[in-house]
Length: 362
Ligand code: NAP
Ligand code: GDD
Image (cartoon, rainbow, N blue to C red; front, side, top):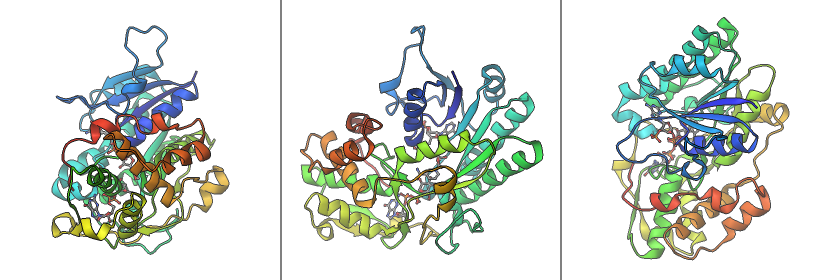
């Protein structure tokens, strides 16, 4: 049985990756940070009580801002694979807390790499690098495109990316960067663009929200479906040689197009409900991201199946059902037809309900 350690297991990607690894028979160790309220809603459905003798999911407390937990865990567990997904991952928030973002998102990676090196671990290491690192570099972007970061988050990720390569080349670690373009799902945090929009669509239909305030509608992103992206992470670590890979769909759409698509899917005229306000603009914007993932398609045999409109339908359906509104239902059918058992509807939307309450901005 392979053993994996996952940081950020309570996040969007961590939760899908946990399901994938458990389905593949792994013993799984997840790192979560201590919070005064429950922060495990995305993994509650796979949680196993510590008293279950044969359980394969184990949770440990740890914070990327410190090192006290890492060395011990890496040394004592001797994991075969480490997926480092934890980060302060919100780009706009990184302008508000740049020092913290640098510490957690940048230095956090070095803390883990050092633990691997010092413990003599043979673990394969995955670094969650980001298309945000390309910043103002012209699209399409691939593994050779130089980074031109435009946010504290992106700068921290470039540092973590570089350190991953330095530990690979300098110390022979099996350490790889997955440079992932935006990927979304019903489990996406409520303050990221797609989820903010699909959640608003559901609430407007339900009559509990009147307007949606957004920032820049002109930026373009290469948006894919998160469960397909965690499959790529796993494939990267199965290669004999550690390498870096760009993962995305190769299609780009503006924020405006996403808004239009999600609202019209629920039969709403977006122009009646959506306003752009300075509050949600960033000091600097990344205008256009488009993945050239030729390398991943060849070396990993990876290609996404869920397209842009499919994604909007999946997310709107999930947010509508979460608050008890009948959805158009196309998203459900897409998941069944395109992804089959892996990410059935009930799994894909787990705990959407809790998240559907409360306010959300940014
Ligand atoms: P996410 O939903 O924001 O999850 C982030 C995870 O990191 C959560 O589990 C969070 O814990 C944890 N975390 C944050 N600060 C921490 C700290 N100081 N110590 C320990 N854990 C901490 O992000 P995601 O969308 O799953 O993305 C996963 C990774 O991929 C991130 O590194 C992100 O930057 C990167 N990435 C994401 C995308 C994308 O489009 N989703 C694209 C490229 C790269 P809590 O649950 O307690 O908050
Ligand atoms: N969040 C948010 N909220 N974004 C908005 C809003 C709004 O009200 N209005 C417009 N946008 C625009 C942003 O300016 C950006 O151009 C785009 O919508 C997407 O924003 P986010 O969903 O916040 O994602 P991101 O592209 O900044 O960052 C995400 O993708 C990166 C990969 O490229 C995050 O998941 C990062 O962690 C990830 O690395």
